[in-house]
Length: 413
Image 1: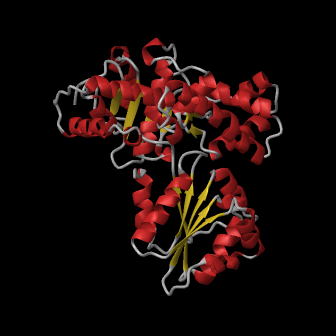
Image 2: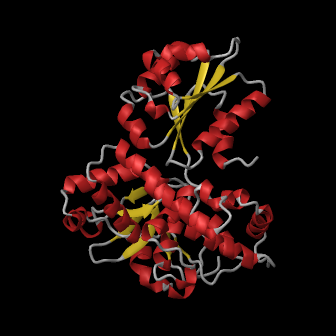
Image 3: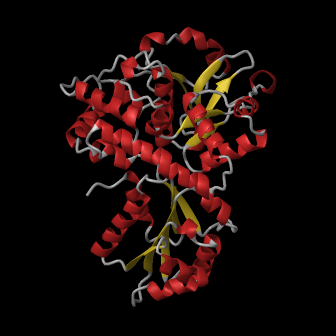
C-alpha cells in the first residue's frame, strides 16, 4: 500500500491532544488517507471508528447532537480515534468539534476531512484555537507520482542523482519523460493511476466539469458561466498579475463579483494568489497579486492543451507554474512572494521568510537566462541570493536544482 507523505505526519499526530483537520481540493485523496489511518489504527490496537457523514443517517445523528458521536465509539477505556469524512456537511462543524473537545477530549480524538477551506472557514464560527491542527493535502508531488505510477526504480534513481553530485544515469531519458507527463497531466491521484492518455484527459475533464461544479454550487455562485470563464482566463495567465478591473470588464460583471470568485477558487485550493515583496513603497509597491494554479493538469485541462512540452507555445508559463508548485511543496504557500517595480523589473519568486532566504527566476530554457538583467534586484537585496531554475536542457543536475532551489544554475554551484 502506497502512502502519501502527509500520512506520516497524521500518524504522528494521532496521540496529540489537538484534533486533526485535513483540508484540500476534491479528489486529492483525503478519504483514502483516512481509510489508511483506520487500517493503521487497527493494526496497532488503537481503538478507531470511521464516520462518513455523507450517509444521511449518521449526518442526522451528529447534527441532532454532537455528543451522539459517543454512541458510535467502541466500548473501551482507551481514547478512541474518530475518523470523520466530509465534516463540512455538518450544520455546525465548529460547534461539533468544540463540544467534543471541551467535554470529551480524554475519550475521543477526531481526525476529520473537509473538501475545501471554503466550507470549513465559512462554517467554523469558532476559531477552535488550541483545539485543532490543520493539515493540507495537495495533489501529488513528483515523488508521489512515481510511486503511484509503479515507477519505484525511477524514484530510487532520482534520489541517487540528488545524493551523488556529478553522477550520470542511464535512466535520465525515462525520468525526463515522466517529469514532462507530470507537468502536462498534474498530480491528481486518479489521473496518475489512469494508464492511457485518453483516460487521463477524460478524468481531468470529469474533475473540471463535475467536482469543480460542486464547488461552484456549494459556494453559492450565481453566474456559473462567468465563474468558468474567469477560471479559464486565470489558467491562461498563470504567473501574471491579477487586474480585477480588467477581468470585471472582460467578463461584464462587477469588481466585487470577480473578487468573490477569486476568493472561492483560492479557498477551494484551485488557485493561489501570491503577494508582492517590497521594501521601497514608492517604487516597488505593486498592489495586484500574481496567480498560479495549484495543479498543472487542471490548468492544461482548462486550456484544453495536452501537447508535449517541446511543442507548446506556453511552455515558459507552464514551467513557471511548475516551479511555483515545487516551492509550495518544499516550503509553504504563504512563504512565496514576487518582486516587481513600477518600472516593470521583476523576479518570479522571492522567499524572504524561510530559514535560508532566496529569490528565484524561472526560465524554461537555460539559454534564456541573463543574470545581468537582474542586477537591480541583486544590488538592492544582497541578502536574498538569486538562483535560476530551468528545465531545458534536461540533465542529471535537474533534480539537484529541484531539491535545492538555492542551486545557482548560472554558476553551477
